[in-house]
Length: 269
Image (tube, rainbow, N blue to C red):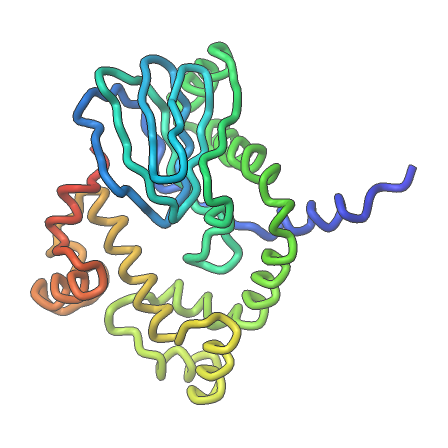
């Protein structure tokens, strides 16, 4: 029997996607789970075990009810509510070819995946083991949920792969050397290209300059560290800002709020 070539191509694409998990938590929530215009550049998976909550914006309202799984795509904006009580497992993750460009952000709406009480309790039990098996299980769970949703975006993913392969050395060098002191000149010199030439090509292919790309990665790294409870001083040291004042001004300039304001609003407890 001949295998469908579209299936083979889709399988090949899936093998080139990167899954990056930032948080996995099991939480009981109450009326303090109340956020307006909440948006992040990572995807969220909610596994509802008990109680009730809901998300809404000007396009839809989605009730979070027990024994369902909900995928909230990256870069989507919703108001989050729990009137009294809700128990959930949640996973924050990114799915990408090009760093900082999430594929599932193209969905533009919340996806509901029916499940069962037994399945969710089994997932909870595996997560609490915190071993190699649970890590692999989590990766495969995200793959199974996400990859069934990406077929409409095959053309865009193909294009992302072409861009990533073209600038592979640049992406890798920035990833390995990311800091506030990293310059475009250093990147171009290290990968052996003229700054003018590669800068013009990168802007044409991606829509942003290399400097803008580096800045976006630094900002996202700062946001992640703030959500994880890092102090501004530790972040300044981690990303080689030199001093805490410059670190705070950088974040405020690009985010519109101070690091402390962001941490207060978004810290993962």
